[in-house]
Amino acid sequence: PATISRRGVLALVGGGALLVAVLSVGQTVGGFLRPAALLLPRGRSYGTGPNDFQINRTASAAQIIDDQTGDRWRLTVSGSGPPVEFSRTALLAMSQHSAQLPIACVEGWSTTENWSGVRLLDLAVIAGVPQPDSALVSSLERNGPFSTATLQGNQTTDPDALLALRVNGVDLSLDHGYPARIIVPALPGVHNTKWVQSIEFRGA
Image (cartoon, rainbow, N blue to C red):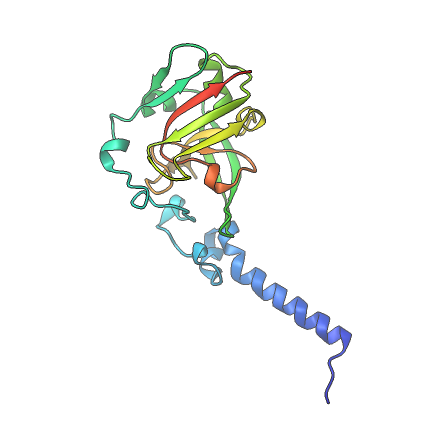
C-alpha cells in the first residue's frame, strides 16, 4: 500500500493549518480580510462602516428600546459619596482616551478595534474611590448573565480601561452598546458590559 512520508504529513498538516488561518483571520483583523472569514459565523458582516464587527448580543435580544438610550439616558456613578449622574453629552465633554483593544469571546471569535471614551479610573476618582478594589457595572439589560459584571481593582485602574462612547472614530451603534459600554484589556467579551446604566466603585 502507498505510504505518506513524514515530510508529506508535515506538509499536509501545515497546509491545513494555513487554510484555517486564512479562512478565520478576517474575524480578528477585519477590513478587507473580513469577507474571507468563512469558517466562523462571527466573521460575517454585522453592518457597514466602523461598526462592522462581531456582536455577541444584539439590542433586540437584550430587549433594549430606543427610549432607554435616548436623550434621557443617564450614567449613575457611585462610591464613597452621593451618586453622580452624567448625560452622554457630559461624558463626551470630559477628557477622552483612545486605545486599540481586542475583545475575545468564549464563542470563539475575537476582534480588535479602536475605542475611545472616559477612563474608568477618572470616573472612580469622581466617585471618591481613587483606588477601587472592585466595580459593579449594571446594564440597561435587566436579566441574565449580561446584565451585571464585577470588575477587579486592577481591571478598573488599568489606564486603557474605558467607558467607551465611540469606536473607530464614530459613535457606538446600538448593537455595540450605545450610549456607553465597558472595554477593559484582556477581559472576556461577556464582561465588557454594553448599554451601561450605572457603575458602583467599591473600596476596601
